[in-house]
Length: 238
Ligand SMILES: Nc1ncnc2c1ncn2[C@@H]1O[C@H](COP(=O)(O)OP(=O)(O)O)[C@@H](O)[C@H]1O
Ligand SMILES: [Mg+2]
Image (cartoon, rainbow, N blue to C red; front, side, top):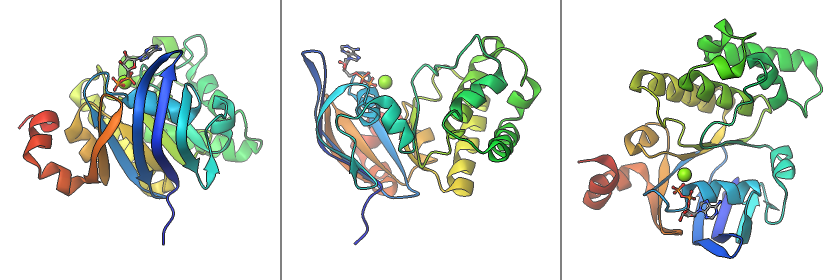
């Protein structure tokens, strides 16, 4: 029997007194990639926040056999989970290089950190050209690339990626997703991918789960989901 790297079972979440997740369940194998689909407000971002300890949660969330419920965001990060939030969250007053170093703050080995910075710059050549410039001076696409690069500078085992394509030109989006696919291959990085653009999500993931008003209503392998008329109509525009 294989045990999943990440397992969510009947997860609930609330902002103060307002409950927004009522029962989200999903499993992610080590090295796997799972998509989260759903309309605006369905609870996709909150699901990632629940994993990261950024919102009050109930139910079961385990990572590598350890419960994440009740942990603080820094403790979750320390376990090897990198969260690239909706809206990027790069530090505009710092340079590109400083942002990358912030991502590696828990690491000690300078040679390994330097090698991973080189890797990030190879993955995102745009960032190499702007390494000493302030993050605030980057284009939207470059900021998203920096947000992913900063996340992987922690050498995580799991990447949480929230709406990475939002507001980006198609060519930039493709570049970004190609880089993420490369990370999946070269680092065996596991990932949970929230994406409005389901065609894009399906280019990366093996399976997906669909959320409706805070509940998982359907999950399965991507071929099965893509073969369903209702899913195609709702999320794939055909
Ligand atoms: N900080 C917050 N405080 C209160 N309600 C929130 C907050 N953030 C999101 N919500 C509500 O929670 C629900 C789920 O939101 P969200 O997880 O952001 O959905 P999605 O990412 O799928 O668009 C929505 O009804 C939204 O209005
Ligand atoms: Mg969202």
